[in-house]
Length: 326
Image: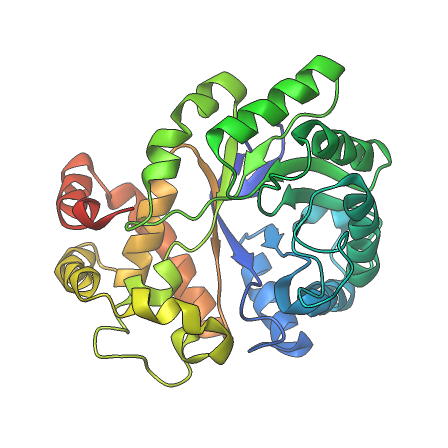
């Protein structure tokens, strides 16, 4: 396993990490989570990503129970969670969902700590921007959570460069903890924000990235070229919103063109896509997902391809995928 610093911090995270979105509770129970986390840890993975909204808090509970059973020293792993949507998106309480106000954030961290069974969470994120709450209020709340010892670093997820800049400057003016990392979607077909919009943030603020969806929700595995297979992410009822994108004819045709390149490098399509994401020097870690150990181990095989992505190979990949990228 390779390790990279998270932005300009001293914290080192594994180049590939393991996330719980979609899988935990929906496809993976505590026993399966423990088994996969153990396999990931044995392979050098030290970062495990989560969010309050994943399975309405049950994902945090499953990961927390798995961590308790595994009994790893707390210094040996990094855990994250994210706040914005709340636990019950259908609830009526206006200050418990779709917000980053102080009241919600100060209570959300306590709920996550209880579900995880931890004294602190390493990384906490504002899961989406909140246009109705002043950024200064959000930044102050995140700073206070860190000051109280309930978290170590804070960042954002899917924020615009302008909003990240505003949060960083507000924190700087008041001497608060500044946002350290952003968690954006990044893959061969979704790249403009990471490669263009955020470009100045890497140099100016030392922003680190913990990217998600390296396989474009499975599109880049090639398994959706003939439709939606049973048991896949696209077949899940709560993932129905992904299906149109997964069945995009032009992108699936491009995936077919990428397959020979993956074979030349001695890997699979999925490994090529993950390695391509990790090749970006601004990416601190690539969050992968898995519903079984064999899938996890296959994803980890992407590490062997990173150094094989020469400028010439990258140019071939870009010629196929970049014209279809958002």
